[in-house]
Image 1 (cartoon, one colour):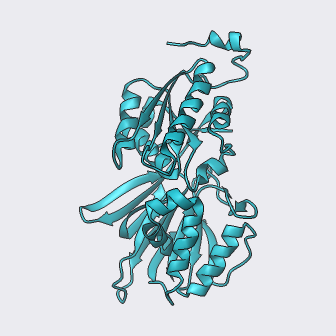
Image 2: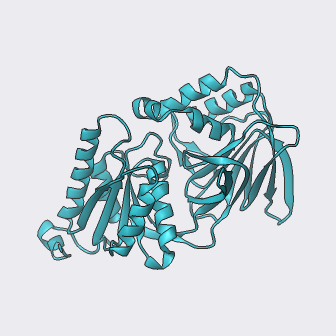
Length: 333
């Protein structure tokens, strides 16, 4: 195994790379996006950057939906100290769930090389979009112990749960994820969501549901909404400038965005506000901080209302969102 002595030959030092990444497991989805051969080449070059710094790097492609969870668990058992998710927020989410299933006692760090359509976490971590440059940045990053988000939701098999990092959404936001086809994301990237929103805008209203959240003073508040977003990160990519919504990975709560309206025009207004990065105030759209939120259907609403996390569709109401008591290690600046 390549060890740390190579640092001296390359002009690096332990001070340059304070976190000793020794064995890195790079995982990616070969079926995601276009130009798949070029994608594999980018990941190979990123791995070469790590190897040049004395890191033993192994590349592994996913085999089916959800396989990154199992493969990450296997990497922990195999003794890798770092798992690097090469892709978008969905790939990162699966790697996180693999780490949480393996148990936090393993002490394995999670890193990101952005190659997805959204890359919300990578943006918040100030990671460059070039894979080789991102790999060099990760060598300088340090692991930070964080509490992930935890969402429970209904499926045909019963109530399931999933850990997440950046964001979870219930209602119209999640429906947008369901409507945005995988092929469209691969072809148009983040702009695929604009196409999905344009299609949804042909409706006049969105279905409403009940939301209850815990306020800062410990009391519970309730409301009727068509969308809830629970945000952990602060920096999001906009078309004109970065979006800042007041969340933070190190905070043990969420920045909740609550749509107390079912009218499409308010959604389009809010979407334009976020997408542009200007963040102007939208009527009937509020922001609060909370560590726990629950969403349940209204008796009068029969439409299916879905949820998503880190851009991946999950299930439907009822939904509970909380902070996981256990922690994981994320490579951060």
